[in-house]
Length: 335
Image (cartoon, rainbow, N blue to C red; front, top):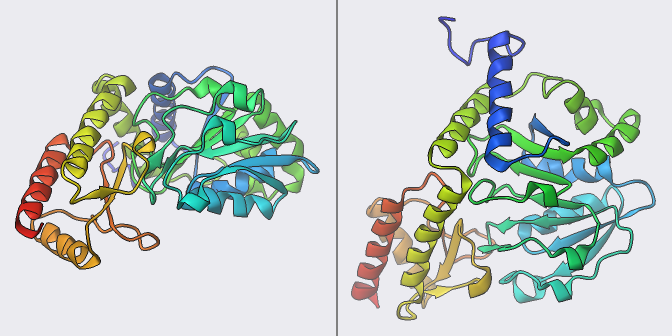
C-alpha cells in the first residue's frame, strides 16, 4: 500500500486479511477445534479476571478457583466482586511453592466453571498436566495461560475458555487472546444486554474482534510470531527447546547447593526459574555483577525477593548457556 501497518485503517481489507491470517495460524498451531472462537481483545489478563465471571458465571451459581500464586489470587478476588467463588484448592500456606495434587481439589458440584493459572510467574511453578478429568468431571475448565501459552502443546479441547496476554510468548503487549467454546459464548450472549458492551465476549465475537479499534500493530506482530513458531516445527519442537533451556539452568541451581530453587522440583516452571542465594547480600551482589555482565531482569519479584530468570520462547538457548557459565563463575568467586 506504500504506508506502514501503523497507518492503515483497521477497517481496511489489508488489515482484515492480517487479522484473519493471525487467527488461522493460532488455530493451526494449537489445533483449535471448529466449535471454538478466537478473539483478539485488549486489557490484558487483568481485564479477563473480570470478563470471565461477568460473561460465564450465571447468577446464583458458584465458580471454583484453584489458588496457586499471586496472579491466581488476583483472579479469584476479582471474581468475588461478580459472584460466588469457592477456593477449590490452594497452596498459599506453602508460599505457593507447589501445585496442588488432584486429591486436594474440592470442587463444587455443578460449578459454573473451574479456573486455573497454568504458570505462576512470580513463584516459578507450572502445571505439568491439566487437572485430571476424574477430579473436575464435566465442569468447564477456564485457564489463564498468559505466561506459558504456546511454550508447549496445549489441549484446547480440554478447556472451555483460555485467555492469555500476548506479552510473554505471543507478541508485544497490547493484545489479549481469548479462545472460547461455543457453549460458553452462548452464556455470554444470554447476559450481553446487562453487560457494558466492551466487556461482552458475544459482542466481540459477533464483530470478529473489530467492534472497536483493535491494537493493529500488536496483532500484526503476533501474526509474525505465529509464523515463526510454525516455522520452528510447531509447539512440540518449541517445547523441546524450552525443556533443554530449563534443564540446563535447574541443573546448575541444583549442582552444589550454593543456589537454592524455591519451587517444588516436580512443579518447576519452564518459563520462570526462581532461586535464592545463601544471603541477601550475595543476592544483591549477584544482581549487580550479572547486570554488569549483560544479564538483565534477574532480580526476583518484589513480593518474594530472590532471583528469577524468565526464559520465554524468544530467549535463546545460548543465553541460558551464558547465564549458567556466569552462575558457575560467581559461585567459584563468591561461594
